[in-house]
Image (cartoon, rainbow, N blue to C red; front, side, top):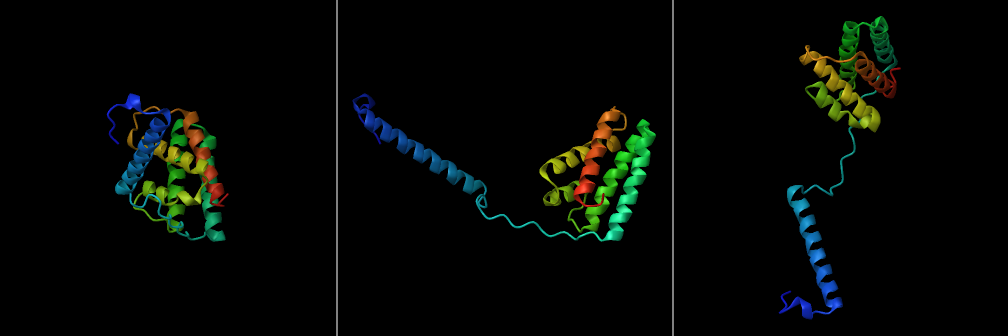
Length: 164
């Protein structure tokens, strides 16, 4: 709408023009979302059903966790580091056993998101990132309490997987 002078418009006319501009902006925004991501409002697929663990597998994984706890109880930094690496491997092996897709632990964690609660999933990611730090940046100092906290995250994940 082009008018000779905005000052000559009544208050009501200015309100209508403002509303129309707002609607135009909202429509352009929504159109922009669809043009960048056409599935923006599409129904999300249901999560894939992963294989259930049988009792023998649960028992075996529980025994492996108890071995990890033995390392934790030794309390030395090298044992804690080893315990974290082993805990990460254990979760990864469980995800593989459950037929979670992905070529790496990180990819499998992404695929396994529906298996875990929001909190446990995010904590597990943090634990995995700390594991990567230990594995790939050996010179980087990591404190005992950081490793112990991450190990609790792995234990929580094992609980949600009904291994413990």
